[in-house]
Image (cartoon, rainbow, N blue to C red; front, side, top):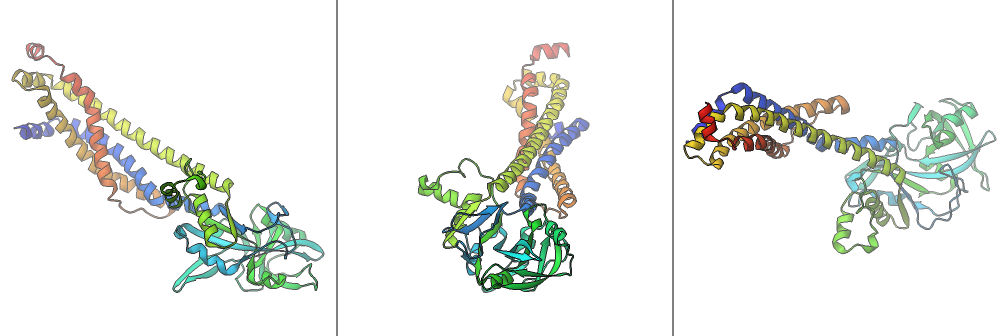
Length: 424
């Protein structure tokens, strides 16, 4: 009997029911789109942010006090400690190895070009690193700093080419294709001739430097197989209060939780363990900026989803107010025939659940399509269907329908059967 009453109730006043389905579906569509984008493009967004520089710096733990200006080490090439180039493969063997997007080693060498003192840096440009048999990781400056602008061509690793910073190129009056002779400061004096393959524009200290293949600078300085510093770009989770904990004071359970969370500090700690004699420090200026951006975007998306659900609930409440007002006589009749408030309420609640279920299904489909279009427009890649979101979307749709129906129904159940039937 109850199912027959609810079935007939759903088929009546179809315009109002369709408006309710539309309201719920729009709220669920926005929520589904936000959830899909969060699942699909969260890493993509982090990868885009990673193009603005490394967030972990690795240096020798036994290093002496730095003599640096503007982030550039100006000590003699043989001063201080070094890291073995062969140990860099260990960066891809840590627990969070898949979060290591790119890295590049650096070896600094003071030199002279046409009587002008310059800093020459050896690094990888596009390097194929053999991690394990059958496992090759492509890394280097091109992946570490994809936002760098090069007028000309990137040098090839192992070649006799170099990049010249824009400010240095202007001071030396050189262009791509020119040859430069670099003279070292050692005894005996080492020399090296490199062809300028491109002019580098970064807006940073690199504009005053020359960057050459690591092997060439190692040979120039006599430091074969050694590097001075390593910059690492890793996908990380914004640090919260727990992420900033002193690990020496954590118990075993909390330590495991901290270690297995991709905080920039925990990844730096694992890198330090993987490379003997190293000290890995997060570049908090970069990490904090990324965290603020990611948190702000996440908060914005959450507020958008909440606003959409609240709007849908209000629209549902408006529809139910109208339905309850129209069916006051019907409510009074039910109650005069002995129906309890719970029995009467079940009819309207089941009706609301039907509207919510329909709205949830339509909203999920619409939201998935919206997320795919937005992702394609912003990132150039469409998102897939995330079925894991469907149960949550349907649950939220039913919650919106019930929440929107609660107040109108509560007021409708206060109707006196005598008053309604007499006035009817």
